[in-house]
Length: 128
Image (cartoon, rainbow, N blue to C red):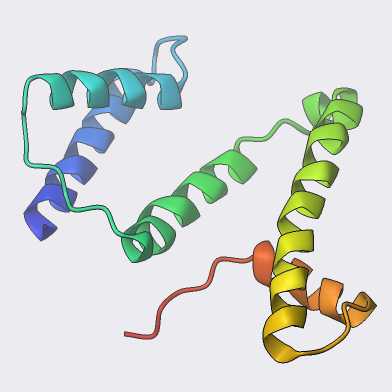
């Protein structure tokens, strides 16, 4: 599996260098190259587990998105972003809060919902 991750990292670097002078977004180029590599069986894909996704791929994607965000564009589209993000967080918090209240046998009060918000919006890494 380590060889696959190293090969994917090398491929990612090559794609980044190759498209640096084009107008193609980096993520779009990665998807196109990834689809081509998968279609032609260029390398053996790593076995995807929850821990691998949360520990390796998700932090890089979130960091890249936050690093490349344009503040002026966010100011212009804040209503749309809020309209999608607020219900999304609520949809994540309510079932988590209900599960916490049910498992711990407590009433679903504000503290339970706050804890659910903290649990549902953070990445939890396994302790291995």
